Image 1 (cartoon, rainbow, N blue to C red):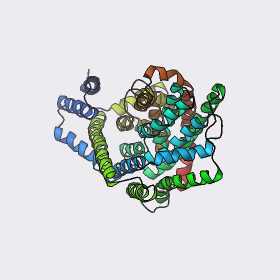
Image 2: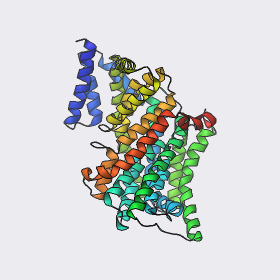
Image 3: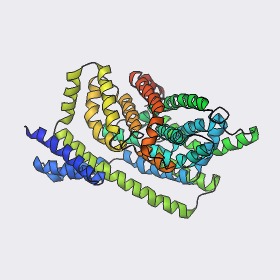
Image 4: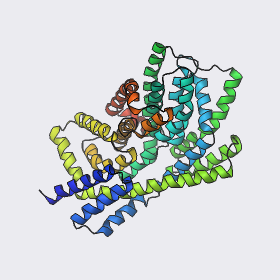
Length: 431
């Protein structure tokens, strides 16, 4: 057995052993990288330099600002405003509250950029409401969890920033633009089974508002939704970079919650800053150690091995895309999305570009597949949060998830094999 093969075995086996005994992920990645480097006589200083370079990026500054903006808007009551606004738009039809769930996640995805944040904030409100209105608990959880995947596609998305960094510095603004149509298409795709199930089970019609009430609700919600226009409008028209837009979004979030919604205090801001700092510290540690892990994968020529494997199966681009979809869907079932992006991008990116797949298009494919992993057992983070909110055992949610999985799979196939769904907006508005 060659030293490279032995090194790969040590690297991967030590990672899984450490994760199995519940060592925090950042430490698992770092320790497995150090063990393998020692075996291969690689200077540890080089490994630590890779860790530092992994987070030493101006682009990465967008992440803490987006985290901060999302937490401020969530604590500031934006999720309530968005839910009422969604009810105005789709609440009059059969299963109106369920349809609100889908549309609300679409709106909130443009604020938080996080599936878990979506389930935690919106799910905590809408799941109990749906139960009171007569919706089945497993249906409510399945719908809330799967619709939250829109949050990783519709900008701003922290995961797109991770992909841009891992892929060697792609345009974040183009990635943001590429996520809109797939994200909206996913929402529409999930609305179809939602409506059909609502009609078959005779779920209730949602709340109906007068024109005056609807207008007031829309005005209140638009103050928060304007953040999306600040981010994308500013980036698309060259007013500021994606990183600068994140800082502007954070400042705007403070102004809106203090002076428009008027339900933010300095004590809340202090709590949010501490909470954001804890989240950021975790993210920084994972990115740093995953950079070292990625370096070890490259040193051991794992991307070349994977590429050779795919090409040994077929040189057809469409078959390789299907194999990648399967790999990403399975991987997403067992590990967190952000970490997988940082680990798998250096491996799969050369394979994808080598067979002529556009880097932006491949990024959307990867993020969508791994997003589905967030609501798939056994380690689906968003699914676990949704089940915890509803106090529903994980195994009882699986059957209710099946029609939504089917809808998501169809959308994934469309996005995979119709590249213009991802590339059209960047081609006309991107840089």
